[in-house]
Length: 89
Image 1 (cartoon, rainbow, N blue to C red):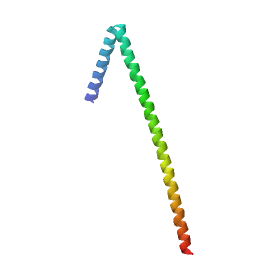
Image 2: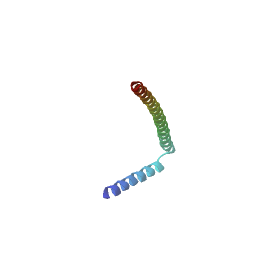
Image 3: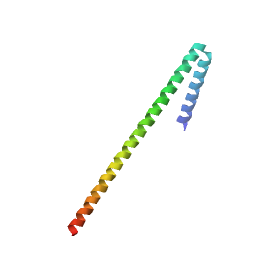
Image 4: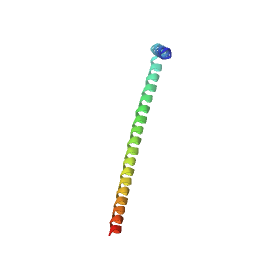
């Protein structure tokens, strides 16, 4: 529990230091920080969308493979059933 508390306090301290430094910086520097944050946000959004698209594609491929496999099993079962009926006659 002590490590979590210390870590949280350290994070809070770093946040306060960053906020203080941001507020004391020039408007140009503040705009640079805003631009950096917006760029990072856009990159994260793009990465998330790419990841979501990849997951959708993978899920669709797995679904197609499962359907193909099920069809193969069905065909094999029909062949075995036909063979059994033919051998019984």
